[in-house]
Length: 289
Image 1 (cartoon, helix red, strand yellow):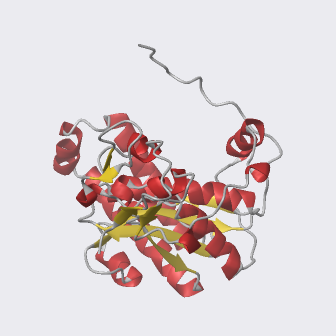
Image 2: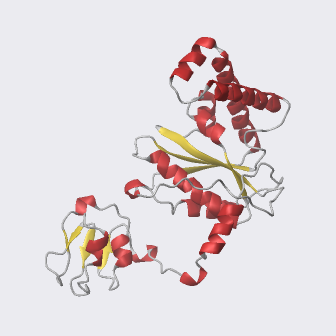
Image 3: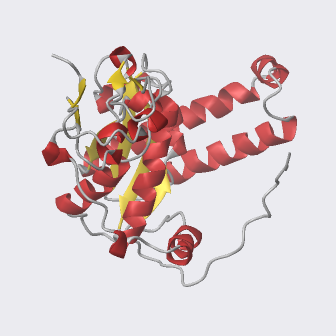
């Protein structure tokens, strides 16, 4: 069965489908019905279906029930969107309040609309709410950071790391201090990793998928903005992401599908402390050519 078809009776011969997807469509003569020349290159993104004013194009993965008109009346203005982006802050204090399932689903729903290479939509989601599991992940992450700090104190290993040229000696020294502080706070009963958030949302994917990491972190950005619009606070859990790829204890706790890797993570919850102001960022460094 063909993936993409064009109804010649409905086609307006405007060539819009060719203009947005030359790798699949071709219009051999101006004013003629376009033809599908390279169906094998179709990413099932739906651009052709969405752009056709006559509804003449059918795409196997884009049935009518999945297509919706744009409600331009509720689209945010530049000013309102920029205000939300500028006012969003990383939250490290969360209310002792559960996040409703339907609210989490809205956050994930927004994340699913992030772009992905070749429209693979490779990102999958793991929602963790069970308190003991959250604590276990935080503790295992802190232990991994402690192990890492001890390794960086080893003169030989430290020298090897610095030879890679990624960090300066001063930065590595600061890392060691930070990691040791996190371990100490964890041992005293605090949670400097997930910050006692009621939800940990992890973004994972099959490692064999091209650009899986980029896809996941585009989804993370969407999720943060949707969460903000719903009154939720978020914190990117970089330590958990880093540790999950290297620590077997965390891998056993997460029970991800085989060959999957965590590429992004958010602590999620209702903020205990909110911000009524925002601050300018450094001016953009722009090169015009």
